[in-house]
Length: 124
Length: 168
View 1 (cartoon, each protein chain N blue to C red):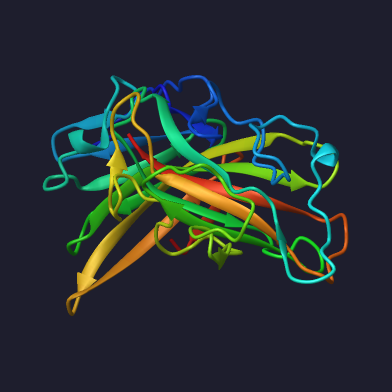
View 2 (tube, each protein chain N blue to C red):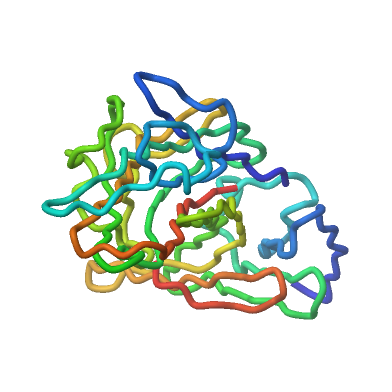
C-alpha cells in the first residue's frame, strides 16, 4: 500500500472503528456496514483500530498464522441493594485481538478499547 | 452500525414474563417482578437453619439484532457473593422454566462467581458455545437466590454483572 489516505466517518456513539488493509484495497468498517464475516482473513494484511477523537491507532499485522478476533463486549450491571433500587447500567466497547496456535495450543491476545481511548488487556 | 438491543427479561410466577427490560434483579421474599420496593420484601434472619429469597429468574432476549450477527459468550458474576455477613448469593442456570421457590434452589446451587468467569455460565439453547442470531431469540435462564443464615446482618449490597459478546 502506498500513501493511501481514507476519510473515516463514525456513527453516533461509536468511538472506534476498524480498517481492513489488503494488498490492493483499504476498507473502513462504517463505509458500508461491514460484518466480521465480511473480512477476508486469508488476504488481510493489517487490521487497524482507529479512535474517533484521538490519534490513537492500534495496528494488528495478520502474520504468522494469526486469526483475527473482533467483537463488542457488553456489561450490564445491576445493583442488588437492601433498601433502594439503583437500576442498572450498560457499558459496551470493542474488543480486538488475535488467536494463534502453537504446539496444538491456542493462545489469545485480547484488547478492550475504551471510549476515551484507553486500552486494557483482557484475560477472556 | 446499529448495536443489537438486548433486554434482560425477568420471569416470575407460573409463567409471567415482564414485557420490558428488567428494572432490577433484586432478591425478595415474594415472587414478584422487578421494580419493587425492596424494603417491603425483606428476607428475615432465621433463628435456626437458612431462609431463602425467592429465586430470581431472568434471561436475555434479542429485542433487535441490529447490524450484529450474533450474541454469544454469556457470563454472570458479581462483585461479591457475600453482600453481608451470613448472606450468600447463589447462582445457576437452566434451559427450562419452573415457578420460583423460596426454599433451597435446585438450580442456583453455587455461590455466584466474583469475577468474570473464563467460560460461559449462561447458555443459549441448553449447552455451551450456543449463540443468539435473530431478533426474538432468548438465552437460557439465569437463576439467582439469596441464602440468609442465622448470623446474617442487614444491609449490604452487591452488583451483579451480565456480560455478553456481540459479533458485528
